Amino acid sequence: MSSPMAVADGGVEYPLISVLVPCYNRECYIEETLLSILEQDYPNFELIVVDDGSQDASVEKIQALQQRHGFQFYRQANQGVSAALNTALIHARGELVATPDSDDIMMPGRLMLQASYMREHPEVGCLGGRAVYIDANGKVLKGKRGQMVRGYDFAELLGHAIAVGATVAMYRREAIERVGRYDPRIRIQDFQMTLKIAYLGYRVEVLPEVVSGYRRHEGNLSKTAYKGQLEYDRMAVAPYRDHPAYAAGMTCIVNKALKQSVLSEKRYAWSLLLRLPPWRWNRVTLRRIRHLLFKFG
Image: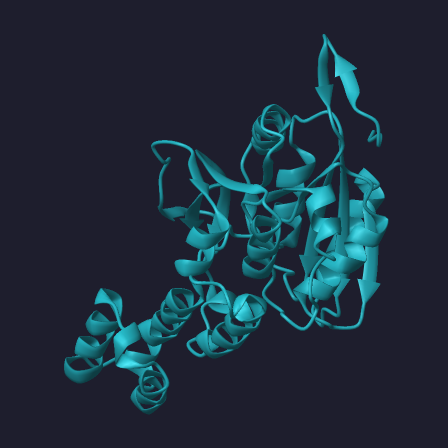
């Protein structure tokens, strides 16, 4: 049972959390994802699922769970994850917002952990955590707990092209509304929202605890996905072109695209390098060039 008002329990207040899950063709994983949310011990949250035009059996599986658990479910034509989250926000009432991916696992106690931290740190507008990589069957591949809370200001996030991943992020709802929600043209949601919230002056922090299992499978390991990622990353940083950290951020964005292209699409990798002035290269760029010249996929 969720309430827009904080729920008092032994003197402790629990603000309502809206857990927003955008789904597209995740029939193999959506049930496990939603159950990991529904089994959270936090006493005051609402679950809102938006199917973004799935063409598999995702809708049927979501509807079957909805009949048993009574969460909100909406459907729309395929418009991308950012648009799906905007649809969910129309119906959300929470003071805090979590945005797990539809193929990942929410670790037990995650909502309680992050909500407690944000209650104690009102200056934090975006709070992340650690994720472990899991395979298609849920087996942990790699990842572990961190050492301490990490904090970032806008210049660090932009200059190093750091995004708090959507699957581990919890946001303050007022911050999302102040930045105008998600730009639906940018179909990768986490980088744009991290930058937008930090630009307003909110703190962005990452907890050392593992809060999510990030699933690696064929559906999210496309060998050409970095091309779309590069374009959306460029769109995300474009509003901050006049900031001193912009050039360094663009170098990091290109380096990220080079990581795969230097092995699989060398001609494309060369085209990226030619668009990056040599005075903006860094150690990572030089390492990518070495791989481009001497390694093969």
